[in-house]
Amino acid sequence: MDRFTYSKTIGAFVLCALISLQISAQSELTIEPVKDGLYMIVGPGGNVGVRVTPEGVILIDDKFPRNFDEIQSLVASVSDEPVKYVINSHHHGDHTGSNAGYIQIAEIIAHKNARDNMLRGNQDAPPRLVYSQETSVFLGGAEVRAYYMGTGHTNGDSVIYFPDLKTVHGGDLLHGIAPFIDYANGGSSRGWVSTINGMLELDFDTAIPGHGALMDRRDVLAFRNQMEAVRDHMKALIRDGTTAEQAPEMIQNPDLSWTQAADGLFMQRSVPGFYAEIARELE
Image (cartoon, rainbow, N blue to C red; front, side, top):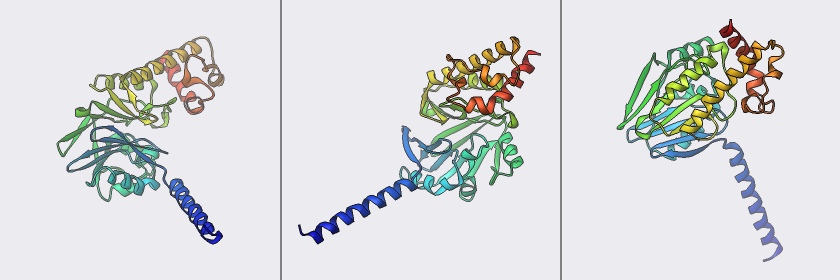
């Protein structure tokens, strides 16, 4: 191979590598199989559930506004059918950001409190359809149920259930790390325990969390148990005289991963409201 040909070959290789890196950098999301006809889109923002049917696709959540086109592309990689319904698990923008795109082509559904939270926060494209206690979408022989089981992450969380697949999508009621309790929008640790107990009454073996890897029933039970343990720990601290100012440091316990400073999320964002909630319970 002469020098000119060699240089052209190397140049072409470098160009292809740069294009590949650029495409990779632009691609934030990936789609993973969960069960037959059910997928999960992962990446920055909340995990998206994708229920494929012969008559259309039902999404659970839709991440950020910038993700609409990429979600559409990933859905097209597993189905030739259009998205017909989006169920918002709650109102936070990393789960509802692409509502503005989807409301043009599909119906968006959420609990009525989630819609109220979106309106109060001036969020784009609040759902046109809401429910109070339970609703279902029937499409292409599949049923997707949405339950309101009480307060938890917020006051408007939906537990999404795929009965034929024995799978739930918990939104941010389930989380791979320490959860955030959104007290400004009706969140409650006490309510969260009750809501997870309601979820555990469903017949499921697989759970899609709002963030993090797939869970099984034991993981959901462990999540519930740690919420109870952290609540008991805070009760003991308050009974021993711990003040609200001391709580972020005193709550740290090596046996409770959610309280560790390295995690930070539970510590920095939830402890003030958590302390106030538990203190009220002890009055």
